[in-house]
Length: 302
Ligand SMILES: Nc1ncnc2c1ncn2[C@@H]1O[C@H](COP(=O)(O)OP(=O)(O)O)[C@@H](O)[C@H]1O
Ligand SMILES: [Mg+2]
Image 1 (cartoon, protein in one colour):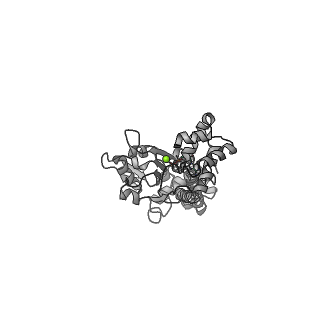
Image 2 (spheres, helix red, strand yellow):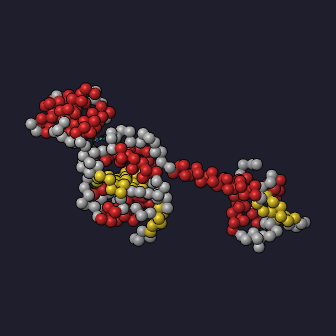
């Protein structure tokens, strides 16, 4: 079998599919029909990919043999699986490893990202619960396939054109409550998937390769009911005291580069005084100048 033979067989298969082999081509097609040189056809025949249905002085009629058909199907299946793999996101076990706790949210988001058909997820709840961090982590694995927005699309063209142009698989929207009306309208349509036509320019957007949306919003009261109903809304509850200590220590050591002793000291100093991880980060940044106690007093009031 030579390079390019699979393509030739593919061509032939497409030709056969486009005509009525039973009626019009009972004696097989000839080289003129498929536009492949007779020598090449006779080689494919010798290799068993073609059947010789008819032969006279003036006409040699072929059709694909079972072996030829198998080869074409095999090549197609392989091509399809390669595309599919390429489309799959690299969701690994360590996707959300920098986020402490939130086990159920992690599980939900992984499932939503891997689901064959999209399930859109909206994370909501008070500030400093790692909502934005979740979006960041997804953006990291999404790479080119992900678009990140804070509120609305910043380009003048807007969300619709951005999606039409870049064909993302994932749309990450932080602070969804700040999205403008035009982008929200586009989003509502896109979240339903399928082949979409934009009324104004008649510009079509093919979302048969469906878009998944993961969004975050502190506030829910700003969102319209129709937008809300398109999302699985997952509320993140404020950390309890034990969780707060764990998260603060983890964040200060891993992200702010403190040693465990200092991180522990700051966590203890804030215990019962704050539930905001960002307070801990501010204390950590001022502590080298002020000391932990003083930083806490100045930041939170004595
Ligand atoms: N569970 C957590 N694991 C890791 N970091 C956290 C966690 N919760 C809060 N943080 C930290 O708190 C800060 C605020 O998180 P962010 O994702 O911006 O919160 P949100 O978007 O919910 O307001 C970030 O520095 C983040 O690293
Ligand atoms: Mg945020």
